[in-house]
Image (tube, rainbow over all chains, first blue to last red; front, side, top):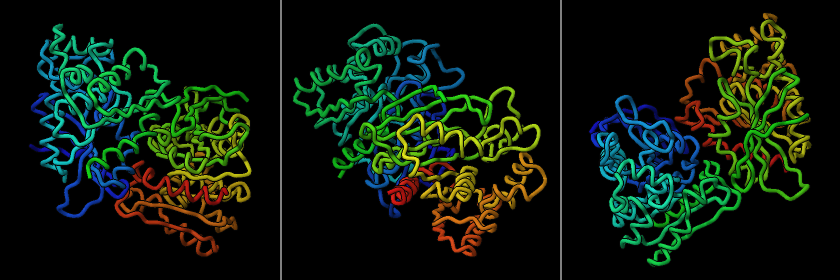
Length: 278
Length: 278
Protein backbone atom coordinates (compact mmCIF):
# COMPACT_ATOMS: atom_id res chain seq x y z
CA UNK A 1 0.00 0.00 0.00
CA UNK A 2 1.44 3.35 -0.99
CA UNK A 3 0.82 6.74 0.53
CA UNK A 4 1.41 10.22 -0.76
CA UNK A 5 2.92 12.83 1.56
CA UNK A 6 0.95 16.06 1.29
CA UNK A 7 2.99 17.98 3.86
CA UNK A 8 5.41 17.52 6.72
CA UNK A 9 6.42 20.12 9.26
CA UNK A 10 8.57 19.94 12.37
CA UNK A 11 6.64 20.38 15.61
CA UNK A 12 7.64 19.81 19.24
CA UNK A 13 10.79 18.01 18.11
CA UNK A 14 8.84 15.56 15.96
CA UNK A 15 7.12 15.65 12.60
CA UNK A 16 3.50 16.55 11.86
CA UNK A 17 2.56 15.06 8.51
CA UNK A 18 -0.52 14.96 6.31
CA UNK A 19 -0.88 12.00 3.95
CA UNK A 20 -3.25 10.72 1.28
CA UNK A 21 -3.85 7.25 -0.10
CA UNK A 22 -6.29 5.44 -2.31
CA UNK A 23 -8.54 3.52 0.08
CA UNK A 24 -9.79 0.10 -0.92
CA UNK A 25 -12.40 0.26 1.86
CA UNK A 26 -14.04 3.45 0.64
CA UNK A 27 -12.93 3.38 -2.99
CA UNK A 28 -11.83 7.01 -2.68
CA UNK A 29 -8.69 8.95 -1.84
CA UNK A 30 -8.52 9.42 1.94
CA UNK A 31 -6.46 12.01 3.79
CA UNK A 32 -5.16 11.58 7.33
CA UNK A 33 -2.58 13.19 9.62
CA UNK A 34 0.12 11.59 11.75
CA UNK A 35 2.33 13.17 14.40
CA UNK A 36 5.51 11.24 15.14
CA UNK A 37 7.57 12.46 18.10
CA UNK A 38 11.34 12.42 18.17
CA UNK A 39 12.53 8.83 18.62
CA UNK A 40 15.55 6.62 18.16
CA UNK A 41 16.18 4.96 14.79
CA UNK A 42 14.31 1.67 14.71
CA UNK A 43 12.32 2.49 17.83
CA UNK A 44 8.55 1.90 17.72
CA UNK A 45 6.20 4.08 19.71
CA UNK A 46 2.66 3.56 21.04
CA UNK A 47 -0.15 5.08 18.98
CA UNK A 48 -3.25 7.11 19.84
CA UNK A 49 -6.09 7.09 17.31
CA UNK A 50 -8.31 10.16 17.31
CA UNK A 51 -11.69 9.99 15.57
CA UNK A 52 -13.25 13.34 14.71
CA UNK A 53 -16.80 14.61 14.92
CA UNK A 54 -19.47 15.71 12.46
CA UNK A 55 -18.34 18.07 9.65
CA UNK A 56 -14.65 17.56 10.50
CA UNK A 57 -11.74 16.33 8.44
CA UNK A 58 -8.31 15.34 9.78
CA UNK A 59 -7.51 19.06 9.80
CA UNK A 60 -9.67 20.23 12.72
CA UNK A 61 -7.83 18.31 15.42
CA UNK A 62 -4.52 18.69 13.59
CA UNK A 63 -4.88 22.47 13.72
CA UNK A 64 -6.71 22.94 17.00
CA UNK A 65 -6.31 19.80 19.13
CA UNK A 66 -3.11 20.81 20.98
CA UNK A 67 -2.01 17.18 21.18
CA UNK A 68 1.54 17.58 19.87
CA UNK A 69 3.04 18.86 23.11
CA UNK A 70 1.56 16.08 25.27
CA UNK A 71 2.35 13.42 22.65
CA UNK A 72 5.95 14.64 22.43
CA UNK A 73 6.29 14.53 26.23
CA UNK A 74 4.81 11.02 26.46
CA UNK A 75 6.36 9.88 23.17
CA UNK A 76 3.12 8.78 21.50
CA UNK A 77 2.22 8.76 17.82
CA UNK A 78 -1.12 10.48 17.07
CA UNK A 79 -3.22 9.54 14.02
CA UNK A 80 -6.27 11.51 12.83
CA UNK A 81 -8.36 10.09 9.96
CA UNK A 82 -11.09 11.84 8.01
CA UNK A 83 -14.74 11.29 8.98
CA UNK A 84 -16.06 9.95 5.67
CA UNK A 85 -15.29 9.38 2.02
CA UNK A 86 -15.54 12.55 -0.05
CA UNK A 87 -15.61 13.76 -3.60
CA UNK A 88 -17.59 13.56 -6.79
CA UNK A 89 -19.39 10.28 -7.19
CA UNK A 90 -19.72 9.87 -3.43
CA UNK A 91 -23.28 10.13 -2.11
CA UNK A 92 -24.09 13.10 0.07
CA UNK A 93 -26.93 14.69 1.96
CA UNK A 94 -27.69 18.40 2.12
CA UNK A 95 -27.59 18.36 5.93
CA UNK A 96 -24.33 18.40 7.90
CA UNK A 97 -25.21 15.37 10.06
CA UNK A 98 -25.40 12.80 7.24
CA UNK A 99 -23.23 11.89 4.26
CA UNK A 100 -19.86 13.48 3.59
CA UNK A 101 -18.26 14.56 6.87
CA UNK A 102 -20.64 12.32 8.82
CA UNK A 103 -19.68 8.69 8.23
CA UNK A 104 -20.44 7.56 11.81
CA UNK A 105 -17.71 4.89 11.56
CA UNK A 106 -20.06 2.24 10.11
CA UNK A 107 -20.05 0.13 6.96
CA UNK A 108 -23.23 1.19 5.19
CA UNK A 109 -25.55 -1.54 3.94
CA UNK A 110 -28.09 0.79 2.34
CA UNK A 111 -28.29 2.72 -0.93
CA UNK A 112 -27.01 5.24 -1.84
CA UNK A 113 -24.32 4.97 0.85
CA UNK A 114 -23.18 1.38 0.47
CA UNK A 115 -20.41 1.62 -2.12
CA UNK A 116 -18.23 4.21 -0.35
CA UNK A 117 -19.38 4.71 3.24
CA UNK A 118 -17.27 1.98 4.80
CA UNK A 119 -15.65 3.89 7.62
CA UNK A 120 -15.75 0.95 10.04
CA UNK A 121 -13.55 -1.11 7.74
CA UNK A 122 -11.42 1.92 7.08
CA UNK A 123 -10.62 2.85 10.69
CA UNK A 124 -10.64 -0.72 12.06
CA UNK A 125 -8.68 -2.50 9.36
CA UNK A 126 -7.29 -0.60 6.41
CA UNK A 127 -5.82 2.48 8.08
CA UNK A 128 -4.20 0.53 10.96
CA UNK A 129 -2.49 -1.76 8.44
CA UNK A 130 -1.35 1.24 6.41
CA UNK A 131 -0.05 3.11 9.46
CA UNK A 132 1.73 -0.01 10.74
CA UNK A 133 3.49 -0.31 7.39
CA UNK A 134 4.58 3.30 7.00
CA UNK A 135 5.13 4.70 10.51
CA UNK A 136 7.18 3.56 13.53
CA UNK A 137 4.17 2.38 15.55
CA UNK A 138 4.10 -0.40 18.13
CA UNK A 139 0.74 -1.98 17.30
CA UNK A 140 0.80 -3.89 20.59
CA UNK A 141 0.32 -0.55 22.35
CA UNK A 142 -2.72 1.27 20.97
CA UNK A 143 -5.11 3.80 22.49
CA UNK A 144 -8.21 5.39 20.99
CA UNK A 145 -10.13 8.59 21.61
CA UNK A 146 -12.46 10.90 19.76
CA UNK A 147 -14.94 13.74 19.88
CA UNK A 148 -18.72 13.67 19.54
CA UNK A 149 -19.45 11.39 16.55
CA UNK A 150 -15.78 10.41 16.86
CA UNK A 151 -16.29 9.70 20.56
CA UNK A 152 -19.01 7.31 19.44
CA UNK A 153 -16.49 5.85 17.02
CA UNK A 154 -13.80 5.48 19.68
CA UNK A 155 -16.14 3.84 22.18
CA UNK A 156 -17.65 1.40 19.70
CA UNK A 157 -14.36 0.44 18.05
CA UNK A 158 -12.79 -0.15 21.49
CA UNK A 159 -15.78 -2.12 22.78
CA UNK A 160 -15.63 -4.38 19.72
CA UNK A 161 -11.83 -4.80 20.09
CA UNK A 162 -11.07 -4.88 23.82
CA UNK A 163 -7.81 -6.76 23.19
CA UNK A 164 -6.52 -4.17 20.75
CA UNK A 165 -6.74 -1.02 22.86
CA UNK A 166 -5.18 -0.50 26.25
CA UNK A 167 -6.91 2.85 26.66
CA UNK A 168 -10.19 4.37 25.52
CA UNK A 169 -11.32 7.92 26.27
CA UNK A 170 -13.78 10.33 24.67
CA UNK A 171 -14.66 14.01 24.49
CA UNK A 172 -18.41 14.70 24.53
CA UNK A 173 -19.24 11.42 22.79
CA UNK A 174 -22.52 10.29 21.28
CA UNK A 175 -22.92 7.30 23.61
CA UNK A 176 -26.23 5.84 22.44
CA UNK A 177 -26.91 6.65 18.79
CA UNK A 178 -29.91 4.33 18.79
CA UNK A 179 -31.62 6.63 21.29
CA UNK A 180 -30.84 10.11 19.93
CA UNK A 181 -31.82 12.04 16.76
CA UNK A 182 -28.34 12.24 15.17
CA UNK A 183 -27.86 8.52 15.59
CA UNK A 184 -31.33 7.46 14.55
CA UNK A 185 -30.97 9.41 11.33
CA UNK A 186 -27.47 8.18 10.56
CA UNK A 187 -27.80 4.54 11.59
CA UNK A 188 -31.23 4.37 9.95
CA UNK A 189 -29.80 5.81 6.75
CA UNK A 190 -26.59 3.80 6.62
CA UNK A 191 -27.80 0.52 8.17
CA UNK A 192 -31.54 0.50 7.47
CA UNK A 193 -34.58 0.33 9.72
CA UNK A 194 -33.74 -2.93 11.55
CA UNK A 195 -32.54 -1.62 14.89
CA UNK A 196 -30.91 -4.93 15.77
CA UNK A 197 -28.23 -4.08 13.20
CA UNK A 198 -27.53 -0.83 15.01
CA UNK A 199 -26.46 -2.42 18.28
CA UNK A 200 -22.89 -3.14 17.16
CA UNK A 201 -22.59 0.61 16.53
CA UNK A 202 -24.00 1.88 19.81
CA UNK A 203 -21.74 1.99 22.87
CA UNK A 204 -24.56 1.61 25.38
CA UNK A 205 -26.09 -1.29 23.43
CA UNK A 206 -22.68 -2.98 23.09
CA UNK A 207 -22.21 -2.81 26.87
CA UNK A 208 -25.76 -4.09 27.45
CA UNK A 209 -24.93 -6.95 25.08
CA UNK A 210 -21.82 -7.90 27.07
CA UNK A 211 -18.90 -5.88 25.68
CA UNK A 212 -16.45 -4.74 28.34
CA UNK A 213 -13.52 -2.35 28.75
CA UNK A 214 -11.10 -2.16 31.68
CA UNK A 215 -11.93 1.51 32.24
CA UNK A 216 -13.06 4.63 30.46
CA UNK A 217 -12.51 8.40 30.69
CA UNK A 218 -15.16 10.77 29.32
CA UNK A 219 -15.07 14.57 29.52
CA UNK A 220 -18.29 16.45 28.83
CA UNK A 221 -18.90 20.20 28.96
CA UNK A 222 -22.06 21.16 30.80
CA UNK A 223 -22.59 24.16 28.48
CA UNK A 224 -22.50 21.89 25.41
CA UNK A 225 -25.58 22.67 23.33
CA UNK A 226 -25.87 19.03 22.23
CA UNK A 227 -25.66 17.57 25.72
CA UNK A 228 -29.29 16.92 26.59
CA UNK A 229 -30.63 15.81 23.21
CA UNK A 230 -27.73 14.12 21.38
CA UNK A 231 -24.96 13.15 23.80
CA UNK A 232 -26.70 11.98 27.00
CA UNK A 233 -23.71 10.73 28.99
CA UNK A 234 -26.09 9.56 31.74
CA UNK A 235 -27.01 6.63 29.48
CA UNK A 236 -23.36 5.57 29.34
CA UNK A 237 -23.00 6.06 33.09
CA UNK A 238 -25.99 3.78 33.73
CA UNK A 239 -24.74 1.11 31.33
CA UNK A 240 -21.23 1.19 32.81
CA UNK A 241 -22.59 0.99 36.33
CA UNK A 242 -24.78 -1.99 35.48
CA UNK A 243 -21.84 -3.71 33.75
CA UNK A 244 -19.22 -2.87 36.36
CA UNK A 245 -17.09 -0.83 33.96
CA UNK A 246 -15.19 1.88 35.87
CA UNK A 247 -16.20 5.09 34.11
CA UNK A 248 -14.58 8.41 34.99
CA UNK A 249 -17.18 10.88 33.70
CA UNK A 250 -16.11 14.46 34.27
CA UNK A 251 -18.76 17.12 33.75
CA UNK A 252 -16.72 20.24 32.96
CA UNK A 253 -18.47 23.39 34.08
CA UNK A 254 -18.98 26.06 31.43
CA UNK A 255 -17.40 24.17 28.55
CA UNK A 256 -19.08 23.90 25.14
CA UNK A 257 -18.70 21.41 22.26
CA UNK A 258 -15.78 23.17 20.53
CA UNK A 259 -12.06 22.64 20.26
CA UNK A 260 -11.64 25.11 23.13
CA UNK A 261 -13.12 22.31 25.24
CA UNK A 262 -11.17 19.51 23.55
CA UNK A 263 -7.79 21.28 23.65
CA UNK A 264 -8.24 22.16 27.33
CA UNK A 265 -8.51 18.49 28.28
CA UNK A 266 -6.41 16.90 25.54
CA UNK A 267 -3.32 16.67 27.77
CA UNK A 268 -5.36 14.74 30.36
CA UNK A 269 -6.52 12.23 27.75
CA UNK A 270 -3.01 11.80 26.38
CA UNK A 271 -1.70 11.27 29.94
CA UNK A 272 -4.49 8.75 30.61
CA UNK A 273 -3.49 6.86 27.47
CA UNK A 274 0.24 7.10 28.20
CA UNK A 275 -0.22 5.60 31.65
CA UNK A 276 -2.00 2.58 30.18
CA UNK A 277 0.36 2.23 27.22
CA UNK A 278 3.38 1.89 29.51
CA UNK B 1 -16.25 52.82 22.61
CA UNK B 2 -18.54 49.83 22.20
CA UNK B 3 -17.65 46.32 21.14
CA UNK B 4 -19.74 43.49 19.82
CA UNK B 5 -19.14 39.98 21.14
CA UNK B 6 -19.02 37.52 18.23
CA UNK B 7 -18.33 34.44 20.35
CA UNK B 8 -17.12 33.35 23.75
CA UNK B 9 -16.06 29.86 24.75
CA UNK B 10 -14.57 28.47 27.93
CA UNK B 11 -10.95 27.31 27.57
CA UNK B 12 -8.36 26.34 30.16
CA UNK B 13 -10.55 27.72 32.93
CA UNK B 14 -10.82 31.13 31.26
CA UNK B 15 -12.74 32.60 28.35
CA UNK B 16 -11.67 32.80 24.71
CA UNK B 17 -13.66 35.54 23.03
CA UNK B 18 -13.85 37.05 19.57
CA UNK B 19 -15.02 40.66 19.30
CA UNK B 20 -15.73 43.30 16.66
CA UNK B 21 -15.86 47.06 16.82
CA UNK B 22 -16.04 50.03 14.48
CA UNK B 23 -12.50 51.37 14.34
CA UNK B 24 -11.97 55.12 14.10
CA UNK B 25 -8.34 54.52 13.08
CA UNK B 26 -9.16 52.39 10.03
CA UNK B 27 -12.74 53.52 9.41
CA UNK B 28 -13.80 49.87 9.16
CA UNK B 29 -15.14 47.15 11.43
CA UNK B 30 -12.19 45.34 13.04
CA UNK B 31 -12.26 41.88 14.61
CA UNK B 32 -9.90 40.73 17.37
CA UNK B 33 -9.68 37.92 19.91
CA UNK B 34 -8.98 38.05 23.64
CA UNK B 35 -8.25 35.20 26.03
CA UNK B 36 -8.89 36.06 29.68
CA UNK B 37 -7.74 33.44 32.22
CA UNK B 38 -9.63 32.69 35.40
CA UNK B 39 -9.16 35.55 37.86
CA UNK B 40 -10.65 37.11 40.97
CA UNK B 41 -13.44 39.69 40.63
CA UNK B 42 -11.83 43.10 40.23
CA UNK B 43 -8.38 41.66 39.62
CA UNK B 44 -6.40 43.02 36.65
CA UNK B 45 -3.97 40.79 34.76
CA UNK B 46 -0.92 41.54 32.59
CA UNK B 47 -1.49 41.47 28.84
CA UNK B 48 0.42 39.95 25.91
CA UNK B 49 -0.20 41.47 22.48
CA UNK B 50 0.31 39.12 19.52
CA UNK B 51 0.65 40.61 16.04
CA UNK B 52 0.05 38.17 13.18
CA UNK B 53 1.80 37.66 9.87
CA UNK B 54 0.91 38.11 6.21
CA UNK B 55 -2.49 36.74 5.11
CA UNK B 56 -3.59 36.13 8.71
CA UNK B 57 -6.56 37.38 10.69
CA UNK B 58 -7.02 37.09 14.45
CA UNK B 59 -8.19 33.53 13.79
CA UNK B 60 -4.89 31.87 12.85
CA UNK B 61 -3.20 32.27 16.21
CA UNK B 62 -6.51 31.89 18.04
CA UNK B 63 -7.00 28.48 16.44
CA UNK B 64 -3.41 27.27 16.17
CA UNK B 65 -1.21 29.30 18.54
CA UNK B 66 -1.55 27.04 21.62
CA UNK B 67 -1.21 30.05 23.93
CA UNK B 68 -4.22 29.41 26.16
CA UNK B 69 -2.56 26.78 28.34
CA UNK B 70 0.57 28.85 29.03
CA UNK B 71 -1.46 32.04 29.51
CA UNK B 72 -3.77 30.27 31.98
CA UNK B 73 -0.77 28.95 33.92
CA UNK B 74 0.92 32.36 34.06
CA UNK B 75 -2.38 34.26 34.33
CA UNK B 76 -1.85 36.53 31.31
CA UNK B 77 -4.45 38.02 28.98
CA UNK B 78 -3.68 37.43 25.29
CA UNK B 79 -4.93 39.81 22.57
CA UNK B 80 -4.75 39.07 18.83
CA UNK B 81 -5.76 41.82 16.37
CA UNK B 82 -6.32 41.49 12.64
CA UNK B 83 -3.50 42.41 10.24
CA UNK B 84 -5.29 45.07 8.19
CA UNK B 85 -8.60 46.76 7.48
CA UNK B 86 -10.85 44.66 5.25
CA UNK B 87 -14.02 44.84 3.24
CA UNK B 88 -15.59 46.58 0.28
CA UNK B 89 -14.32 50.10 -0.18
CA UNK B 90 -10.93 49.17 1.30
CA UNK B 91 -8.05 49.22 -1.18
CA UNK B 92 -6.44 45.88 -1.99
CA UNK B 93 -3.71 44.35 -4.11
CA UNK B 94 -3.96 41.09 -6.01
CA UNK B 95 -0.85 39.72 -4.27
CA UNK B 96 -0.89 38.34 -0.75
CA UNK B 97 1.96 40.49 0.54
CA UNK B 98 0.25 43.87 0.09
CA UNK B 99 -3.16 45.32 0.95
CA UNK B 100 -5.79 43.40 2.89
CA UNK B 101 -4.13 40.91 5.23
CA UNK B 102 -0.80 42.75 4.90
CA UNK B 103 -1.04 46.06 6.75
CA UNK B 104 2.56 45.98 8.04
CA UNK B 105 1.48 47.94 11.16
CA UNK B 106 2.06 51.34 9.54
CA UNK B 107 -0.14 54.40 8.96
CA UNK B 108 -0.15 54.73 5.18
CA UNK B 109 0.57 58.13 3.71
CA UNK B 110 0.06 57.13 0.08
CA UNK B 111 -2.95 56.57 -2.19
CA UNK B 112 -4.89 54.33 -2.42
CA UNK B 113 -3.99 53.07 1.06
CA UNK B 114 -4.15 56.23 3.12
CA UNK B 115 -7.78 56.38 4.21
CA UNK B 116 -7.97 52.92 5.85
CA UNK B 117 -4.50 51.41 6.28
CA UNK B 118 -3.74 52.93 9.68
CA UNK B 119 -2.64 49.83 11.55
CA UNK B 120 0.04 51.66 13.55
CA UNK B 121 -2.58 53.91 15.13
CA UNK B 122 -4.86 50.93 15.53
CA UNK B 123 -2.47 48.63 17.41
CA UNK B 124 -0.58 51.40 19.25
CA UNK B 125 -3.48 53.58 20.36
CA UNK B 126 -7.03 52.60 19.56
CA UNK B 127 -7.04 48.90 20.40
CA UNK B 128 -5.09 49.29 23.67
CA UNK B 129 -7.61 51.94 24.83
CA UNK B 130 -10.50 49.69 23.82
CA UNK B 131 -9.03 46.63 25.54
CA UNK B 132 -8.24 48.65 28.68
CA UNK B 133 -11.87 49.76 28.81
CA UNK B 134 -13.51 46.36 28.25
CA UNK B 135 -11.17 43.73 29.72
CA UNK B 136 -9.49 43.27 33.12
CA UNK B 137 -6.01 44.25 31.93
CA UNK B 138 -3.26 45.88 33.95
CA UNK B 139 -1.88 48.30 31.38
CA UNK B 140 1.21 48.86 33.53
CA UNK B 141 2.22 45.30 32.68
CA UNK B 142 2.28 44.74 28.91
CA UNK B 143 4.27 42.41 26.68
CA UNK B 144 4.29 42.14 22.91
CA UNK B 145 5.13 39.40 20.44
CA UNK B 146 4.33 38.44 16.87
CA UNK B 147 5.13 36.32 13.86
CA UNK B 148 6.81 37.29 10.59
CA UNK B 149 5.18 40.59 9.54
CA UNK B 150 3.74 40.60 13.06
CA UNK B 151 7.22 40.03 14.48
CA UNK B 152 8.21 43.17 12.59
CA UNK B 153 5.19 44.85 14.17
CA UNK B 154 6.08 43.68 17.67
CA UNK B 155 9.71 44.77 17.38
CA UNK B 156 8.95 48.19 15.94
CA UNK B 157 6.06 48.97 18.30
CA UNK B 158 8.22 47.95 21.29
CA UNK B 159 11.26 49.90 20.06
CA UNK B 160 9.10 53.01 19.69
CA UNK B 161 7.54 52.49 23.16
CA UNK B 162 10.25 51.07 25.42
CA UNK B 163 8.44 52.33 28.52
CA UNK B 164 5.20 50.58 27.63
CA UNK B 165 6.41 47.00 27.22
CA UNK B 166 8.32 45.00 29.78
CA UNK B 167 8.85 42.16 27.33
CA UNK B 168 9.28 41.85 23.56
CA UNK B 169 9.76 38.59 21.68
CA UNK B 170 9.21 37.47 18.11
CA UNK B 171 8.74 34.36 15.97
CA UNK B 172 10.57 34.50 12.63
CA UNK B 173 10.25 38.28 12.38
CA UNK B 174 10.93 40.55 9.42
CA UNK B 175 13.69 42.52 11.14
CA UNK B 176 14.75 44.95 8.41
CA UNK B 177 11.89 45.67 6.00
CA UNK B 178 13.93 48.40 4.35
CA UNK B 179 16.40 45.75 3.17
CA UNK B 180 14.14 42.92 2.00
CA UNK B 181 11.63 42.49 -0.85
CA UNK B 182 8.46 42.17 1.27
CA UNK B 183 9.33 45.31 3.19
CA UNK B 184 10.49 47.36 0.22
CA UNK B 185 7.22 46.64 -1.54
CA UNK B 186 5.02 47.31 1.48
CA UNK B 187 6.80 50.33 2.92
CA UNK B 188 7.27 51.78 -0.55
CA UNK B 189 3.57 51.30 -1.25
CA UNK B 190 2.22 52.53 2.07
CA UNK B 191 4.80 55.23 2.90
CA UNK B 192 6.15 56.27 -0.48
CA UNK B 193 9.64 56.26 -1.99
CA UNK B 194 11.39 58.39 0.67
CA UNK B 195 13.28 55.77 2.63
CA UNK B 196 13.84 58.14 5.54
CA UNK B 197 10.15 57.71 6.34
CA UNK B 198 10.62 53.95 6.56
CA UNK B 199 13.10 54.01 9.41
CA UNK B 200 10.49 54.32 12.14
CA UNK B 201 9.03 51.06 10.77
CA UNK B 202 12.23 49.03 10.55
CA UNK B 203 13.57 47.37 13.71
CA UNK B 204 17.19 47.40 12.57
CA UNK B 205 16.97 51.06 11.51
CA UNK B 206 15.27 52.02 14.79
CA UNK B 207 18.11 50.42 16.73
CA UNK B 208 20.69 52.12 14.50
CA UNK B 209 18.89 55.39 15.19
CA UNK B 210 19.14 54.91 18.95
CA UNK B 211 16.06 52.94 20.06
CA UNK B 212 16.77 50.45 22.85
CA UNK B 213 15.09 47.52 24.60
CA UNK B 214 16.23 45.79 27.80
CA UNK B 215 16.37 42.44 26.03
CA UNK B 216 14.82 40.44 23.22
CA UNK B 217 13.94 36.82 22.42
CA UNK B 218 13.69 35.69 18.79
CA UNK B 219 13.01 32.15 17.58
CA UNK B 220 13.72 31.34 13.95
CA UNK B 221 13.37 28.02 12.15
CA UNK B 222 16.33 27.15 10.00
CA UNK B 223 14.06 25.35 7.48
CA UNK B 224 11.94 28.49 7.05
CA UNK B 225 11.65 29.17 3.32
CA UNK B 226 11.64 32.93 3.91
CA UNK B 227 14.74 32.98 6.09
CA UNK B 228 17.48 34.02 3.69
CA UNK B 229 15.59 36.51 1.54
CA UNK B 230 12.93 38.10 3.75
CA UNK B 231 13.70 37.55 7.44
CA UNK B 232 17.51 37.85 7.79
CA UNK B 233 17.86 37.63 11.57
CA UNK B 234 21.62 38.22 11.19
CA UNK B 235 20.81 41.89 10.51
CA UNK B 236 19.02 42.13 13.86
CA UNK B 237 21.85 40.29 15.59
CA UNK B 238 24.41 42.75 14.21
CA UNK B 239 22.31 45.78 15.15
CA UNK B 240 21.71 44.45 18.68
CA UNK B 241 25.37 43.66 19.14
CA UNK B 242 26.41 47.14 18.01
CA UNK B 243 23.80 48.70 20.32
CA UNK B 244 24.45 46.47 23.31
CA UNK B 245 20.93 45.02 23.32
CA UNK B 246 20.98 41.47 24.75
CA UNK B 247 19.37 39.38 22.01
CA UNK B 248 18.57 35.71 22.54
CA UNK B 249 18.35 34.46 18.95
CA UNK B 250 17.52 30.76 18.80
CA UNK B 251 17.92 29.07 15.43
CA UNK B 252 15.55 26.11 15.67
CA UNK B 253 16.74 23.19 13.57
CA UNK B 254 14.26 21.81 11.06
CA UNK B 255 11.43 24.25 11.82
CA UNK B 256 9.53 26.04 9.06
CA UNK B 257 7.45 29.26 9.01
CA UNK B 258 4.15 27.67 10.06
CA UNK B 259 2.11 27.47 13.22
CA UNK B 260 3.75 24.13 13.94
CA UNK B 261 6.86 26.22 14.61
CA UNK B 262 5.02 28.97 16.50
CA UNK B 263 2.99 26.62 18.70
CA UNK B 264 6.09 24.61 19.61
CA UNK B 265 7.80 27.66 21.12
CA UNK B 266 4.74 29.65 22.24
CA UNK B 267 5.05 28.43 25.84
CA UNK B 268 8.66 29.68 25.96
CA UNK B 269 7.62 33.13 24.77
CA UNK B 270 4.75 33.29 27.25
CA UNK B 271 7.12 32.23 30.05
CA UNK B 272 9.66 34.86 28.93
CA UNK B 273 6.93 37.51 29.07
CA UNK B 274 5.54 36.25 32.40
CA UNK B 275 8.95 36.49 34.05
CA UNK B 276 9.28 40.14 33.01
CA UNK B 277 5.66 41.02 33.83
CA UNK B 278 6.05 39.93 37.44
